[in-house]
Amino acid sequence: MIITLIGMPGAGKSSVGKRLARLLGYTFTDTDDLIINAAGSMLQDIVDTKGDMGLIGIEEQCILSLELQEDCIIATGGSVVYSDRSMAFLKSNSAIIFLDVPYETIARRLSNIDTRGVVGLKGRGLRELYQERTGLYAAYADMTIKVSGRDRVQDVVNRIMERMQAWKPE
Image: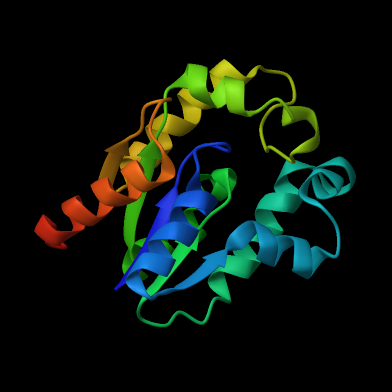
C-alpha cells in the first residue's frame, strides 16, 4: 500500500510519516526534500525568486516523476493541493490521509513562517490560508485524522494504523 499524507505546514506530516514508515517497514519520501534537491535551493528561496507558481510547478514535476513502489509513505508539501495534476496522480496511486490540525496549533508551530517557503501567504494571513487549504485537503482526502495540539506523534500514528485496518479503498 502507498499512503500519502497531506495537511498544513506544521501538521506533522514528515514526523508522522517517518514514524509510520519505520513501524510498517515502508520506505519514506518527503516531497519537500525532492523539491529542494531538484531546485538546488531552499523552499523560501524558490518562492522569493520564482514566486508561488514556480514552487508549485517544481513540486508538480517532482510528484509526477515519482517512481512509486508498494509499501511507501509520502509526506507532501502543504501546497500540493494547488496542483490538480499532482493530486490526481497521488489519488490514483495512493490512499490520501489528511492530518487535520487546529489553526491555533498550526500558528504556534509555524514560528518560522516567513522563512519556511509557504505558498499563498503574500497579501493574506495564515488564518485565511488555513481556511482555504483545509477545504482542499478535505476534498482530496480518503481519510481525515483529527490531530489535537496535545497529540504525540505516536498517538497520530496509532490512530492512522487503527483506521487503515478498517479502511476499504473505494
